[in-house]
Image 1 (cartoon, rainbow, N blue to C red):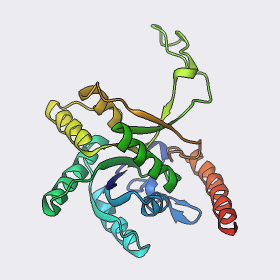
Image 2 (cartoon, rainbow, N blue to C red):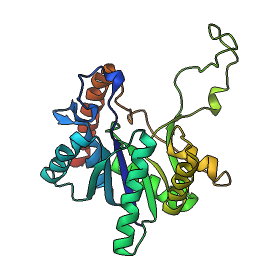
Image 3 (cartoon, one colour):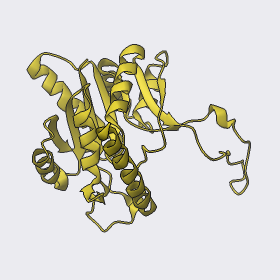
Image 4 (cartoon, one colour):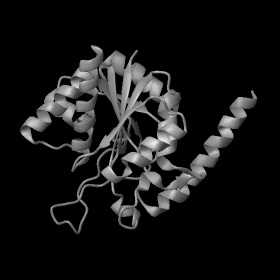
Length: 249
């Protein structure tokens, strides 16, 4: 199995209330940048052969140096992202296609992950890869903890309440057979259509393609607000303890 990962790390983190020019991917968790933890997971995943990172132009040198310093040999390229997240992914897909032209081979799978989700586990990445090969597309998700309500026609009041048993909170890495996601992004670019995530592109342009759900735990959070940093520190400590315990067995 030959899987390639795209890491979206171009976000400016408005909700993090950071100073101008700061990147939430470079905030520290456990004394190391958020993006370090993300890259380490993909470096350790056995199904991943190459990693492409999309980031802001001013962070390219920093992330390239970090990958080299920590020995993340799977990082193939760090490239400039686009105006929107979807543009950044498309830029990485172009880089992957250029690599295909040079090598003469296409990855079986392309998966897309948020750089600000530092706690995805290598074993989860490998299982998502396996399910992608089996079903064509796989997206991780968790069950919502809270009741979700629609807003009514008057936005100051609630409307109906959907069945929580049929709702899932979508996460990343979202994974697809490479030809499928490449074509979906090409068609979206052609129509200038922007989706909320990569799965929404596949759902729009390939409605016959089922997307397999892979239910994860609640550790795979996205660093979005200042409060998330404290939660992330707690998750990091818990995962470190689990790794140390496993290492002693």
